Image 1 (cartoon, helix red, strand yellow):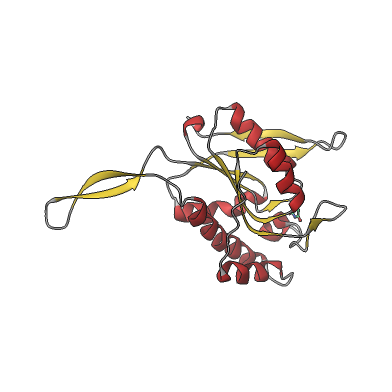
Image 2 (cartoon, rainbow, N blue to C red):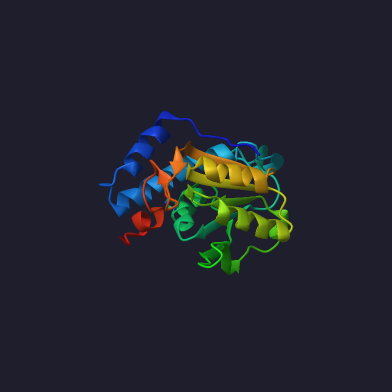
Length: 209
Ligand code: URA
């Protein structure tokens, strides 16, 4: 598994603003969108191009290049993953959107799927899983398992903050999946929150606290 951390002064600056508990929901959402723009540029660096011909301004055909293959799909993990959707789509507007939702079974503490609506021909697409917080990695791992069951072979995970515990879990379960975090934090606390972290990303995105 490759962990490709995005190093850029603007990313570091925006992460600082995101961690600030005084940053309101509107600004928080905008920062997540901007950070997702950066992550999307980085994670798509290896996309293949193919030649095509377009009508040029002089009335003659011009050879240009376009992204090869069929459109990718994003998989925002409900709920906080939705906050990264707009940022990704600003960079690749033709991406299909596959939604998945999981809840935590309180007896087994395992993620349980309650909703999935995947793009058609998902097995032929590159898939970008979106979740701002890779904490224990349990849900992200379950999503990758679900996608692999559907035949997906090219899966990448975009997150804003990752905990070492979540990265280890992903390395163990899905060594073939690349992870792109904006930053790797220190550890998880006893309640499963990333430290230093930013709190509950869903609550901060949607103003539910
Ligand atoms: N999910 C969050 O929203 N925050 C954390 O710190 C961990 C998981």
